[in-house]
Image 1 (cartoon, rainbow, N blue to C red):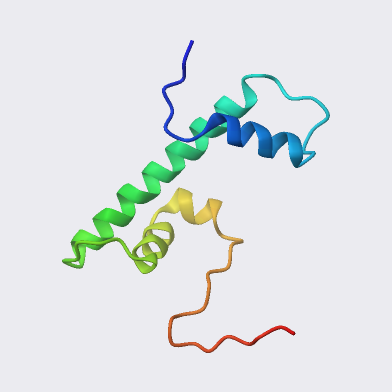
Image 2 (cartoon, one colour):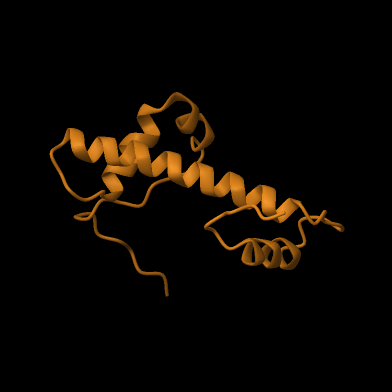
Length: 96
């Protein structure tokens, strides 16, 4: 049976095994995780596209993605602990 996913299941499988997240992995684990990642990505892009259209833009920007995450109750809860990068005009300090 094929999952018909666009994201690479083999890459997710490799990253799970190299990351030492569990001693054993079911063969369906990377397929399931890939499906979840693909679903979340499609959902976020759909919401960001709506944000872009609401602001009469043809391209999705990081700001549209951020607004989409903040405006969606479930996604904002999921991503609440993630910090966003500084704005374009904000200077960044170099680490030596």
